[in-house]
Amino acid sequence: MASFNKIILLGNLTRDPELRVTANGASICKFGMACSRTFSAQDGTRREETLFVDIDAFGRPAEIISKYMAKGRPIMVEGRLRLDQWESQTGEKRSKHTVVLESFQFVGGRQDGDSQVDGGSPYEAKAPAQRAASSASAMGDIDEDVPF
Image (tube, rainbow, N blue to C red; front, side, top):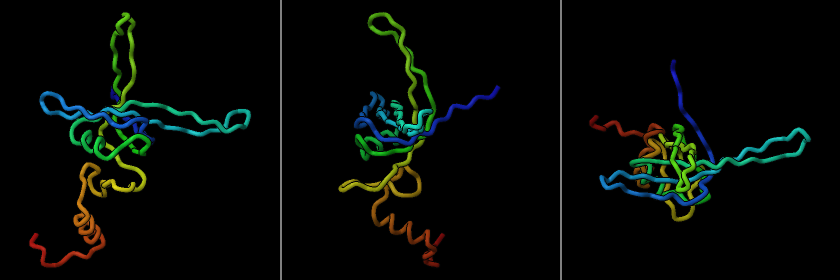
C-alpha cells in the first residue's frame, strides 16, 4: 500500500530560530510557528483557534532561516511529519509531532535593514545587481550577443 506524508503550513514564528552546528558541520535550525484559523461557531460567534508547531530545518535552508527570520515574521513551510518519542526523567513515555522542513518560502515584504530572498530558488539570496539582471531577463531585454 502506498503512503504519503506531506504538510504545508503558513504562519508566524513564535520564537527566534535556534541554529546549531553538529560536530561534522551539519546545520540544524529549530523554530516554532503558529497557524491560526477563524471560524463561526454553531451559536454564530466568530472564534479563532491557533495551532503551535515545532519545525526542524537542516543544511542550507537552516542557515538561511536563522539568518533572515525572527519571532513574529511570516513564513510558509513544506515538509513531512515526524513522531518523536522519549522517556521523561520520571519514567513517563512522551511523544510529539514535529515537522521536518523540506522547502520554505518567505512571506510578506522586506523589513527595514533586512535582505530578502528574491525569486528563483527560495534558498538563493541574490545581490541587488543580480536581482536587476534577472528582472531584465524576465522581461525579454536580453542582449543578442550572449555567447551561450
